[in-house]
Length: 108
Image (cartoon, rainbow, N blue to C red; front, side, top):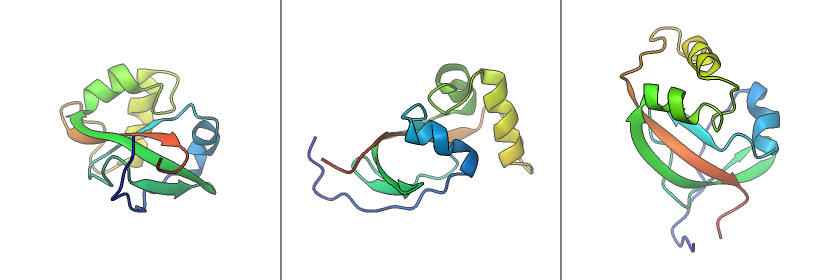
């Protein structure tokens, strides 16, 4: 892959995602803002993760297609937790978010 301009970025994660991230089950995170570029890396729970891709998608698409990679067992669970994490806005299916795909390990 070879990322020459990779940099350390900060992406916050709640403690309940620890096991899913460390086991490699959670490989995506959706955010209202873009946290990095492909090749950038971040630290979470004492480990290093590298961003593979970032793309803008509708929140409903994340719920329907990527809930498992987000660390949830069902689309309904994803929507419920999203609403809890964003109490002012709630879950709005048409909202556009940045879908960050990542893997465990540093840049190659």
